[in-house]
Image (cartoon, rainbow over all chains, first blue to last red; front, side, top):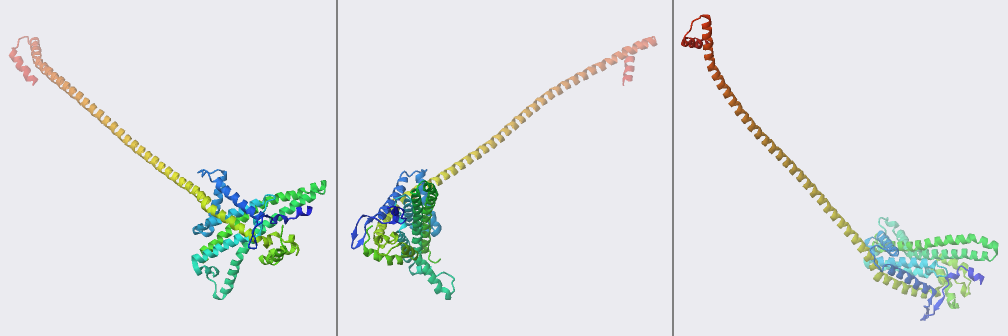
Length: 252
Length: 198
């Protein structure tokens, strides 16, 4: 049991809450699904309830909602121009979803949705899919100009195009791995230091005294993780805006 | 955690295919053949369920934000911006009105000053004219009196001059009487005086 408690991987285990099996696929409602629902519920409820008064002079919570809205709006406008605002609901949903999922994950015993690569990859694939579909819809084959930068000598062109294609294809990977790895590493570190506190305390008075150090570390890491939770949501949204800019203006 | 052996077998190659960095972690933590050894984030058995629920939850979240939350938030911010613009316009209008009022006041003040000056000038002129007529009247009266006085002086002088002749005759007769002892006739004396007086 003691080993189980300190196992830093334990927090990432998926537990089936309502087993569902359709056509050989395991589509069970798991703790991960539960926390996706919680993320959506918390974010929706916050945004909906804080703006319900529609005050001309906003209260504190309404200000938070408005700040998030204008923050993402400015981010998108800076990266992709005014045309990019048609993707505003998409980018805002992504930002809020990732942010709230990250923040919820910081609560002890809570599952972190974004610590699973498939979830972050799903979101990243959605972003890149939007970019590709919209790019071809809007520009047709002109979207392929994305891979052919202006002013490159002809003999270098094959090499440059190859590099551009590789960099484009690696985008969903880097986008998803960045978020996933940050959340995963942060939570493992937190768990390890918290585990030190528990195992040191079991050693008696000296251990309890010594456990002050990892405890302080765990507190500091919690603050850091709070920053990372926000920062990664921001980075995810910013990169989404930049990729969408490529779909809108493929000619560099 | 119930992961069937079939899923566990599938998981190892699939996880290695997902990401190079992940495969390392996987290799370090996973013990082949043991269901609990699979590193949970790389366990493909959970992928369909997670993707499905992500699609459901994120899709609903997107629709809710797009249909309900964002129009509302955008509306609040637009209304506020409109209100601020409106208030600024109103303030600018009021300032214009205040400026116009100040200008009108200054104009009226200038007009009043001019009017006051005119009235003062007029009163001054009238007073001067009045003083002038009064002076002229007084001068005329004085001239008249002077004339009268001169006339009376002239008449007095004339009468006195007339009397001077008789006095001279009397005096001459007296002197003649005293010197000569005779009496000169009045006519001779008068003729003598007259010749002398001339």
